[in-house]
Length: 177
Image (tube, rainbow, N blue to C red; front, side, top):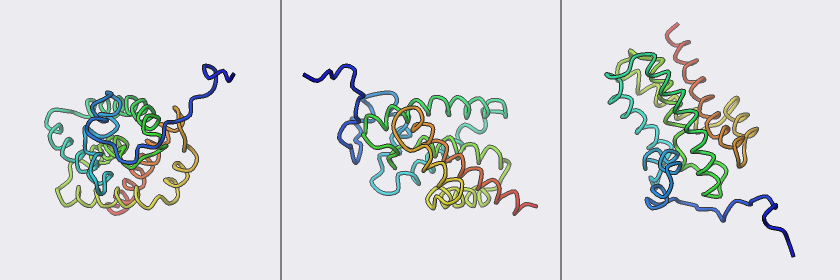
Protein backbone atom coordinates (compact mmCIF):
# COMPACT_ATOMS: atom_id res chain seq x y z
CA UNK A 1 0.00 0.00 0.00
CA UNK A 2 1.36 3.43 -0.95
CA UNK A 3 1.40 6.16 1.67
CA UNK A 4 -0.26 9.01 -0.24
CA UNK A 5 -0.38 11.30 2.79
CA UNK A 6 3.38 11.93 2.66
CA UNK A 7 3.75 11.81 -1.13
CA UNK A 8 4.23 15.17 -2.87
CA UNK A 9 1.05 16.47 -4.40
CA UNK A 10 1.08 16.37 -8.17
CA UNK A 11 -0.75 19.14 -9.96
CA UNK A 12 -4.21 18.23 -11.20
CA UNK A 13 -4.91 17.56 -14.87
CA UNK A 14 -4.41 20.86 -16.71
CA UNK A 15 -7.36 23.20 -16.91
CA UNK A 16 -6.74 24.67 -20.36
CA UNK A 17 -9.23 27.54 -20.24
CA UNK A 18 -10.64 28.67 -16.91
CA UNK A 19 -14.31 29.53 -16.56
CA UNK A 20 -16.15 32.20 -14.60
CA UNK A 21 -17.10 29.50 -12.07
CA UNK A 22 -13.39 28.69 -11.61
CA UNK A 23 -12.55 32.39 -11.19
CA UNK A 24 -15.21 32.77 -8.48
CA UNK A 25 -14.41 29.48 -6.69
CA UNK A 26 -11.41 30.89 -4.77
CA UNK A 27 -10.22 34.45 -4.02
CA UNK A 28 -6.78 33.58 -5.44
CA UNK A 29 -8.36 32.63 -8.76
CA UNK A 30 -10.28 35.92 -8.98
CA UNK A 31 -7.13 37.92 -8.27
CA UNK A 32 -4.78 35.91 -10.51
CA UNK A 33 -7.27 36.01 -13.37
CA UNK A 34 -7.37 39.80 -13.13
CA UNK A 35 -10.96 40.07 -11.87
CA UNK A 36 -12.06 38.03 -14.87
CA UNK A 37 -10.02 39.82 -17.55
CA UNK A 38 -7.87 36.71 -17.91
CA UNK A 39 -10.92 34.73 -19.01
CA UNK A 40 -10.71 36.30 -22.47
CA UNK A 41 -10.70 33.68 -25.23
CA UNK A 42 -8.09 35.55 -27.25
CA UNK A 43 -5.04 37.44 -25.97
CA UNK A 44 -5.84 37.28 -22.23
CA UNK A 45 -2.52 38.97 -21.40
CA UNK A 46 -3.42 41.92 -23.59
CA UNK A 47 -6.92 42.09 -22.10
CA UNK A 48 -5.42 41.93 -18.60
CA UNK A 49 -3.05 44.76 -19.45
CA UNK A 50 -5.96 46.82 -20.81
CA UNK A 51 -7.83 46.12 -17.55
CA UNK A 52 -4.77 47.33 -15.63
CA UNK A 53 -4.71 50.53 -17.71
CA UNK A 54 -8.41 51.19 -17.07
CA UNK A 55 -8.01 50.50 -13.34
CA UNK A 56 -5.00 52.84 -13.26
CA UNK A 57 -7.03 55.61 -14.91
CA UNK A 58 -9.82 55.16 -12.36
CA UNK A 59 -7.49 55.02 -9.33
CA UNK A 60 -5.02 57.72 -10.46
CA UNK A 61 -6.98 60.70 -9.05
CA UNK A 62 -7.21 59.04 -5.63
CA UNK A 63 -3.65 57.76 -5.11
CA UNK A 64 -0.45 59.70 -4.53
CA UNK A 65 3.02 58.21 -4.97
CA UNK A 66 2.95 56.54 -1.55
CA UNK A 67 -0.45 55.04 -2.36
CA UNK A 68 0.76 53.66 -5.68
CA UNK A 69 3.91 52.25 -4.07
CA UNK A 70 1.80 50.56 -1.39
CA UNK A 71 -0.75 49.24 -3.90
CA UNK A 72 1.92 47.84 -6.22
CA UNK A 73 3.91 46.39 -3.31
CA UNK A 74 0.87 44.79 -1.70
CA UNK A 75 -0.44 43.75 -5.12
CA UNK A 76 2.85 41.98 -5.77
CA UNK A 77 2.78 40.07 -2.48
CA UNK A 78 -0.89 39.12 -2.74
CA UNK A 79 -0.38 38.34 -6.43
CA UNK A 80 2.52 36.01 -5.62
CA UNK A 81 0.19 33.99 -3.41
CA UNK A 82 -2.72 34.18 -5.88
CA UNK A 83 -0.62 33.18 -8.89
CA UNK A 84 0.97 30.31 -6.95
CA UNK A 85 -2.41 28.93 -5.84
CA UNK A 86 -4.11 29.43 -9.20
CA UNK A 87 -1.29 27.85 -11.22
CA UNK A 88 -1.43 24.81 -8.95
CA UNK A 89 -5.22 24.55 -9.21
CA UNK A 90 -5.08 24.95 -13.00
CA UNK A 91 -2.27 22.40 -13.31
CA UNK A 92 -0.34 24.81 -15.57
CA UNK A 93 2.87 26.43 -14.32
CA UNK A 94 2.24 29.77 -16.07
CA UNK A 95 -1.10 29.87 -17.85
CA UNK A 96 -1.66 32.82 -20.14
CA UNK A 97 -4.98 33.28 -18.35
CA UNK A 98 -3.16 34.27 -15.16
CA UNK A 99 -2.87 38.02 -15.79
CA UNK A 100 -2.26 39.56 -12.36
CA UNK A 101 1.42 39.70 -13.31
CA UNK A 102 0.55 41.98 -16.23
CA UNK A 103 -1.66 44.11 -13.98
CA UNK A 104 0.90 44.98 -11.29
CA UNK A 105 3.80 45.27 -13.74
CA UNK A 106 1.88 47.62 -16.03
CA UNK A 107 0.71 49.67 -13.03
CA UNK A 108 4.40 50.11 -12.22
CA UNK A 109 5.10 51.32 -15.78
CA UNK A 110 2.19 53.76 -15.79
CA UNK A 111 3.00 55.07 -12.32
CA UNK A 112 6.63 55.76 -13.25
CA UNK A 113 5.86 57.44 -16.61
CA UNK A 114 3.08 59.64 -15.17
CA UNK A 115 2.41 62.38 -16.06
CA UNK A 116 2.11 61.13 -19.60
CA UNK A 117 -0.24 61.84 -22.46
CA UNK A 118 -2.59 59.20 -23.80
CA UNK A 119 -0.19 58.70 -26.72
CA UNK A 120 2.76 58.17 -24.39
CA UNK A 121 0.72 55.68 -22.36
CA UNK A 122 -0.22 53.91 -25.59
CA UNK A 123 3.47 53.62 -26.50
CA UNK A 124 4.16 52.25 -23.00
CA UNK A 125 1.35 49.72 -23.49
CA UNK A 126 2.71 48.61 -26.88
CA UNK A 127 6.29 48.30 -25.58
CA UNK A 128 5.18 46.39 -22.50
CA UNK A 129 3.10 43.94 -24.53
CA UNK A 130 5.98 43.48 -26.98
CA UNK A 131 8.51 42.72 -24.24
CA UNK A 132 6.03 40.47 -22.41
CA UNK A 133 5.17 38.50 -25.55
CA UNK A 134 8.63 38.17 -27.10
CA UNK A 135 10.37 36.98 -23.91
CA UNK A 136 13.98 37.73 -24.83
CA UNK A 137 16.86 38.60 -22.53
CA UNK A 138 15.78 39.16 -18.93
CA UNK A 139 12.20 38.06 -19.61
CA UNK A 140 13.40 34.73 -21.05
CA UNK A 141 15.81 34.23 -18.15
CA UNK A 142 13.08 34.87 -15.54
CA UNK A 143 10.58 32.70 -17.39
CA UNK A 144 13.05 29.82 -17.73
CA UNK A 145 14.66 30.05 -14.27
CA UNK A 146 11.52 30.25 -12.14
CA UNK A 147 9.16 27.93 -14.04
CA UNK A 148 7.23 25.43 -11.96
CA UNK A 149 4.71 25.04 -9.18
CA UNK A 150 4.86 26.36 -5.65
CA UNK A 151 6.15 29.73 -4.37
CA UNK A 152 9.14 29.72 -6.74
CA UNK A 153 6.84 29.28 -9.73
CA UNK A 154 4.41 31.92 -8.46
CA UNK A 155 7.32 34.33 -8.11
CA UNK A 156 8.43 33.49 -11.65
CA UNK A 157 4.98 34.28 -13.03
CA UNK A 158 5.40 37.82 -11.69
CA UNK A 159 9.13 38.23 -12.35
CA UNK A 160 9.12 37.97 -16.14
CA UNK A 161 6.47 40.72 -16.31
CA UNK A 162 8.45 42.95 -13.98
CA UNK A 163 11.42 42.36 -16.30
CA UNK A 164 9.20 43.42 -19.23
CA UNK A 165 8.22 46.51 -17.24
CA UNK A 166 11.91 47.28 -16.62
CA UNK A 167 12.73 46.97 -20.31
CA UNK A 168 9.74 49.16 -21.19
CA UNK A 169 10.87 51.82 -18.74
CA UNK A 170 14.44 51.62 -20.05
CA UNK A 171 13.32 52.21 -23.65
CA UNK A 172 11.10 55.12 -22.56
CA UNK A 173 13.94 56.65 -20.53
CA UNK A 174 16.33 56.36 -23.49
CA UNK A 175 13.69 57.86 -25.79
CA UNK A 176 13.15 60.79 -23.41
CA UNK A 177 16.91 61.31 -23.04
